[in-house]
Length: 483
Image 1 (tube, rainbow, N blue to C red):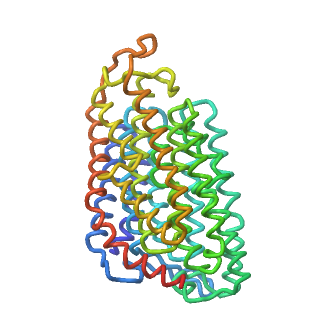
Image 2 (tube, rainbow, N blue to C red):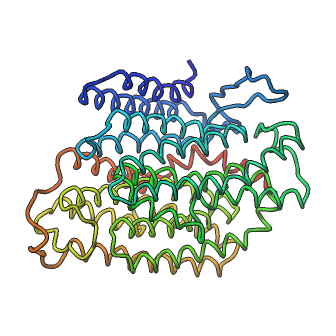
């Protein structure tokens, strides 16, 4: 069987098995085993991936749909490969992080995550506009349930609707754009559409239609309102998924569709993206400094980090785009780790308000060690994964517009300000004994999860060429579509 088909079907088969299980122990074993098998298959996919091949590999053609010229394809190239691996790596961490916290409706919780995993693999492997849209919106359903059913506070239903409606409404124009492209060209096959040149007006209008969807998913300022609300009300596993993978859907859409399909419009609207990204970097950083909820602090910092990604994507050269992809991968590791650390505190002390925490190094030294490490990674310390992506993104942007790159470096300073301020407030100082008692340091399970994320952060920071070698040909081919 095609390895991509195996990747897609494994979580579906696992969710069917879980549906018939009654014992919570068996549900946990089958669910986590399924996700680990999927992760193993994704690593095999990377090992057998041909770095020198331009076109999609392991292609699956769906030829049984009775619509003229509609034979959508699934496949993997150097751009989608690491997003698939990231998705399959984050899901088992989400489930293992929830083993103690989720008590009610455990079967449905695991099924939601397994179906979400299959949908994400389908999103990142779609080489057809219509299929991409279908799975792009399909991801909303399990995530809406995860926030609305297993959220941690009373406003979880409202947060779920925020997430669902913002992202769905933003995609309506993209759907109209896809329909128009189909009637104009007679196909939604991406490999064919890359060879078709739309005229200037068509490109501008279609680019804006796709932008309306992707900008909400990133989210870019001012379309970010749903994100802090969704993070605060989500369970820990939901926050890990939002930060780790779902925020990458918008930037992946820019990379896969907007830039290569509408190259003239992408160049035309680059100043708009630069402006919105710079506002996102500075506004997101300053807003982070004034938050009092630990989850909101990390959520707003994600707005700033994803603004660096959009800035790099529209640097429109190999360095900036490869840097942005690396920054997305890094953010997909570091940000979930920080949300996991916040979840550990919430499980013990049942509050996320910054006011109640201080001096945790005295009673939770291992927790403090991981928190300091991921704080350093979050501010792109050399040797961590974030440094590679951020440096290359800024370097690529500097080649096109040095003033924009110089302004963007303010975000690095502000990022250090809010990250170190948060770390200092929580980890150091005097323990507030009126609110915090000794419950215990992190458990073995939590230690293993954080250790895996730490090793991944260091590995990417020290050996980035392993990743660049797989994505370089696909990124170079994408750049040729521009010029």
